[in-house]
Image 1 (cartoon, rainbow, N blue to C red):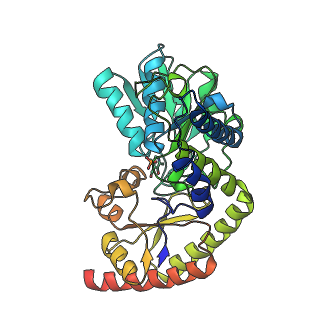
Image 2 (tube, rainbow, N blue to C red; image 1 turned 90 degrees about the vertical axis):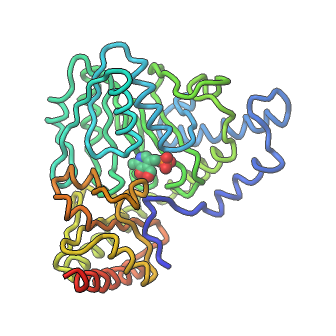
Length: 380
Ligand code: PLP
């Protein structure tokens, strides 16, 4: 089996699991407990927080551990918007992950916020001038993802964050898909908040983190015992946080070289698919995209049927977001890029981890050509 759905999730790495093991067994304490078992857990949590902070170029106190990317996005969108008294207006894009879009919609429905969606172009890019035109004096919060989970387009986040900063508007970015591939130095990006998720990095599902800069007011979303400095209550997932830190350390070693080599392999793969399957169209930006992701539409076929044909050939991929898999609705991302609904239904996304190299991608390109041919011959 060749696994090309890393954007949905990845396996827990062995070293990560080994780092976590002690905190699930002998060293199982509650970090809030005032005894040696609890203190040991508290130390592990503090170490993990230090690793995340060093990675993001921020202070440990700026890191809030969460249950994953969805919760980090919810906390950023709702927590910052509700704590910022200046207005009730949010600026975002139509291609954000559902965790952002639904949180924004909650604020619109329940709290009367107004929302401006900045259009993206046909490659999924946000134009900074359009973003600048969308922010207002009463804008409370802006959020634009660093890399898109369906088409892989990477946004000019540093430029967008600088525009927001000049207007005094808190700026958040969802870096869930960018993590492990791009530099997430929050000072360089100039963002006020940033979300990450463990299971895209080789840590387990159910752990993530939100970076929130300094004294940014933040209304908690989960109330209770006041853990995480009152910003996220609930007994901390110590082993998960330790696993996240271990995955970050493993991922950062040689990241740049790995990303460059993955991007080179991706370009060969894309060229091979496009030359062998004349109907194939790459979606997203041709170069400003994640290194290990390529998504296509195959007009005149059905994406779901192509996926089945690929799976028969031992290749596991997806039509786009795992959250939308199985739904009959066309992807909101592809529609926002201007594709018509029928073509959007023919999408297939390939996303892979560092274990997939050019030999595997060559096999996949062969299989794609065969699978699309088979489905097209049945469809027509
Ligand atoms: N944001 C993006 C861009 C994602 O791709 C995902 C997951 O696919 C999430 C947020 C949600 O993360 P989690 O699965 O950890 O809740």
